Image 1 (cartoon, rainbow, N blue to C red):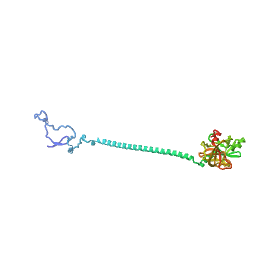
Image 2: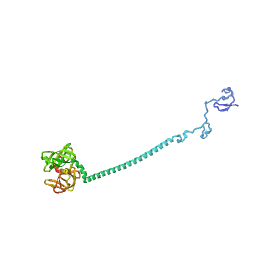
Image 3: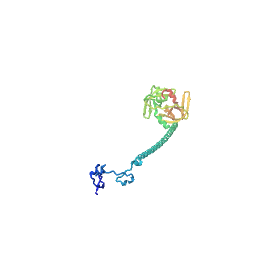
Image 4: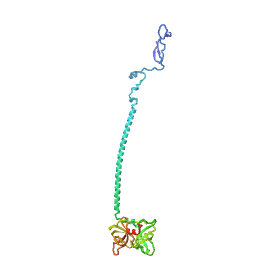
Length: 329
């Protein structure tokens, strides 16, 4: 018997031919003959049978895949995203904790810095207070050079006819472009008595015209008005006491910008008016010059010196001059 092939190409034994008539249902033999060619239920490559045992896949011509439902969660890929998410959450928690720790450290550092700044500020305030106290103490230190530097620009030599004396600018009540100056009446008496009112203020090469405005014979005082702005000295309101150090500025014998120093020897309240006695050297020409204290304030107007004596100078208190010419100090 020859070998035949089925429709799928698989060899099988060839059967003996069957009479077609014998395959009819009403054949006398009563047999149903098998068809010559078995019917094909499906055209194509036959599906191999499923093998129950997964370990016998090698016996099948086709590889088998295990049941996906039987795979572990990690192998199916569902566990990996969860693990990755947990790792991210853990990292975020650690980062947040680190940031919170840093913020807490920064807050502590800020508090410490604020405390340091406050302490330094307190030290600065204390230093400022101490500096102020030292300045006040130094204000009481006698410094003739500093006093002279501040006072000299306000002091001039007065030329009234053939006489010379001294005058100084006082206060800041003069009109714009003008200045009020004090001097002794006996310095300008010759001009005044002659009916003239014009005098000249001199300092170095500078010349400033001035006019005699008012006089007080009994107090030996005269008020001049200059046609130029001159910084005025301040009048002292403190009580004059013996021992105070002073600077006297004037033009003795016509020598302008002359400075002498000394102390207040006495304050004498007499019937004719109070007088300041001092021991700073003065000479003719110092009349009308300012007697200044350590605070660069005017204590009095130098007026005279004792005849045939040394170290006895006399000055009119500045309060007397301010009262005599109200509104200038």
